[in-house]
Image 1 (cartoon, rainbow, N blue to C red):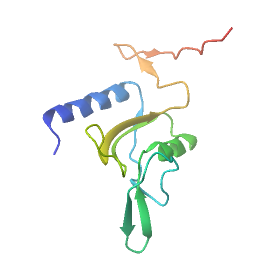
Image 2: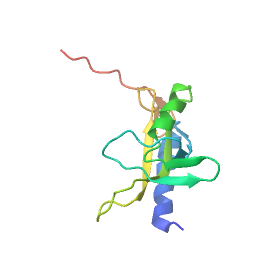
Image 3: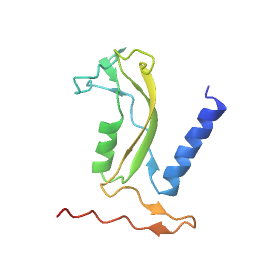
Image 4: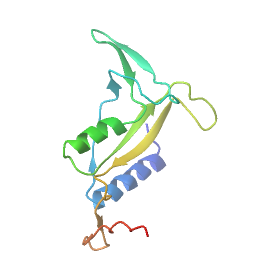
Length: 125
């Protein structure tokens, strides 16, 4: 059960992205392969009939596959799982907010709902 403060924070994050036209997605938490990052240890689970599966350490890879398929700007609020994470500031299960975009960032709107064009990239001299 989430606290009132936690629910309000999630609602604020969702409103922020909705205002900018960014789609919320939910990607699978289990995958056939572990993370390729040598600094992060994946937690594994035995799945009956499917063998060993891994809990995701980040939804980014699956989200980038959606982006490449043409879904557009998207974000996900989820729990991720990492083995070996222990300490005051680290736990095995944490909440993350992850956003991926086509490179120009999400579209923005002013207070009246009108689109604000994305800035052109700066040229280096």
